[in-house]
Length: 202
Image (cartoon, rainbow, N blue to C red; front, side):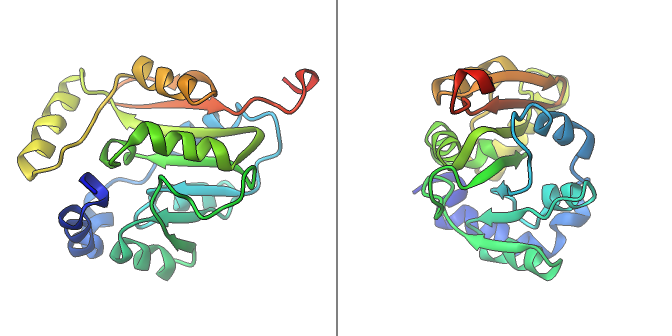
């Protein structure tokens, strides 16, 4: 495996787990809330996939939710668990959940690290119930700050894959989701909704 799920990258995140939250700003609860509002079902069961120390989980906890954090780095998960969040060690491409078992998945600033992002998005769509949503926050590679981030990640040795908001919407659509852009800019948010069980629910 490569990228975030490769041994070298996981070791990197394990090493910086204790400092990660000092360097990274809080997740934007408002943008995540706007993405979750696209759901056509009550949102109660939420997964924070590739959630690391639980940045998105903490933001959503302020919205009255209790997300479960999923990540491949045990060091990062220890930090999330220490903050009281449920934590599951798993590959985003093989989530240990039944079909239609959660109402929403959020991925904040992490999809670009995954070895096969399109496969991971398909897996997220599998576990989200009809009418639920996959909400993804990513970095715009064509913005000024985004171009700098792309160069920085390459310098660190990551083989990250970045998309514009429109390109990521295409990834969601190919996974069978109805996609829309929630916000744009350096850190943008897109959302994909799983088709409802019946046409009347759309």
